[in-house]
Image (tube, rainbow, N blue to C red; front, side, top):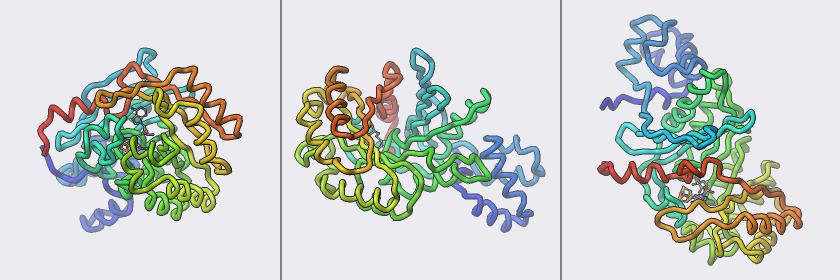
Length: 352
Ligand code: SAH
Ligand code: SF4
C-alpha cells in the first residue's frame, strides 16, 4: 500500500507553490486543479493536457485515490445509495447519496468512528478510530460526483452527517468544504453544505465568529440536562444552557437560523411533555426542528416512535410557532443508519 500523500489534501495555493519548487510554470497548477475538480479525473494518465514528465512526477509524488469502494447498498426505489469506503489504512467509512426531485444530496463522514459515544448511534457504539484528512472528506464527494457526472448531473447538497463529529475534526471539515467551494473548481456554494454537531460549544463559537454561509445543525434530542446526558454523554461537558446560548449568539452574529435534530425514541423523548419542554427551550430562537424517527441500532434498546406520535410532537411545535419537519429516513431498507454498515467492516479489520 503506497503511503504517498493524497492529492485532494492540497489547496490550489499549495499546488501552485509545489509546482514552483518543481520548476514548472505556474499555469499548470490551475490545469491540475481543474482536472481534479472540474473534469473529476482520478488517475494521472487522464491529465493529457500535461507533459508526460509532469504526469510522471505527479504519479510518483501523490495518491489520486485514498478510498476503495466496497459494499454498495441501494434502497428499493434505487434513489438512495450507500457505499462502504475503505481508507488506505483499512478503516471503513460510509457515504450516502440521496436523490430527491432535482436534488442530489450527499451524506459524508468526517471521522472513522466517533469519540462522542451517543448511546443510540452505531458510529458512537464503535468508538473512535481516527480523524479523516480534508482530502479524504473531499474525495467522498468526488466519488459520487463522478457517477453523477456520467448522467449529466451534479452534487447539489452535502451534509456532514455521516460517521464522526465534524467539529471534533474542525479544521479538516472546514478545509474540505473550502476546497469543494472553490470557484475555479467544483464550485459548490457554501449554502449547499450543512455541518451537524453534537454540540461542542467552543467550536460553535468559533464557527459563528467565522461568519460562514454553511448551514449549522445541532443534535439536541432532549430538552433537560438529565435526559440529554443519558443519551449524549457530551452534554455533561457542555450542558443545554451553554449550548442554547451559543446558538443564540450564532444567530445574532450571522443572522442565520439553526437547525435542531431530534431523533424520536419511543417512550423516551417522543411525549407531549418532551415537546412542550422543547418549545420552552427554543422559544424566540430563529430555528427549524428536524424530527427523525430513531433508527434502531444493535447496542441500544430504544425503538422508533410511531408515525402518529411523531405527528402529535410536530403539531405541538408548530402551534407554538416553531417550524418543524418530520424527516423520514429514506432508504431505511438499506441500513441507512449512520455507521451501521461500517460497524461490521471495522470489526473484522485489525486495529492499526
Ligand atoms: N456527529 C454529528 C454528525 C453525525 S450524526 C452529530 O451528532 O450531529 C448525524 C445525525 O444522526 C445526528 O443528529 C445524530 O444524532 C443522528 N443519529 C445518530 N444515530 C441515529 C439513530 N440511530 N437514529 C436516528 N438518528 C441518529
Ligand atoms: Fe458521534 Fe454524532 Fe454518532 Fe454522537 S450521533 S456518536 S456525535 S456520530
